[in-house]
Length: 268
Image (tube, rainbow, N blue to C red; front, top):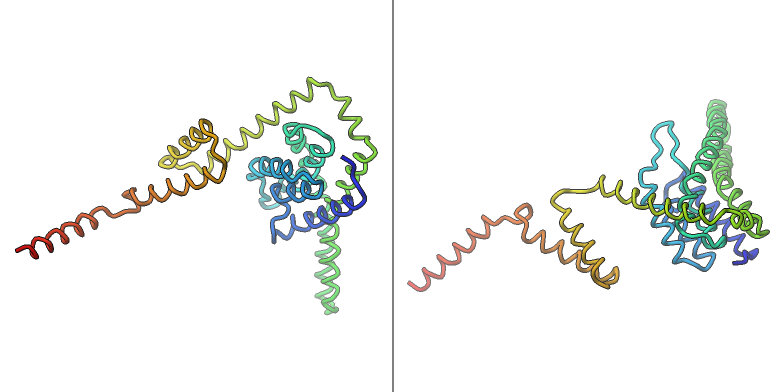
């Protein structure tokens, strides 16, 4: 697939916005599901973008910044993995596997940019101490956000330019088929482990029968996602109606006894 100038501009703008969102967290555009979908939309293959994004989303659910600990950069890895699969014609498994080292590289880049932004904080403190105009604070915020935008967009554009000149493609073609297949297998393993970790975190023993039932229905039928979703809603309603946890059977029994007594009194 050829990357036109218009697509490069759109990728640059979206990548910059995703870089800003990774700090602001307003619309969650930096999450893999949205980032990959947007890049897939620009490249004309939204289906592949959604598949990659959904898989990376499950894998990166546990990637959270805690205190001074910076998590791997899911935004940069999501964009480059999508470009690698759609433009580089690599398998989805290979793209997902390569997303992990890319995220680690993005993590280092994030630490560097955040370290630079610390000086802006000290500068803001001096501006307030000297009672200078608050417009300077706005400039500081804009510069800091610009650095965060370029943190994602510049590596992405360099990667796109390399793909455009077929440098990356030639390097990927050099990789032996055995390694490519190995990456595909390891990518599938990573996805499976990611799903297992998420299920382990959110599982409830009393709901697991529904989970197993869903696997059986999905594997033995040709129902689409909409049909499976409707079946899930119906089962949820039935569970709530029949479960003693949500339904007071004693009150129902008392109500029926009262109704029965009223009818008997009316007959007498």
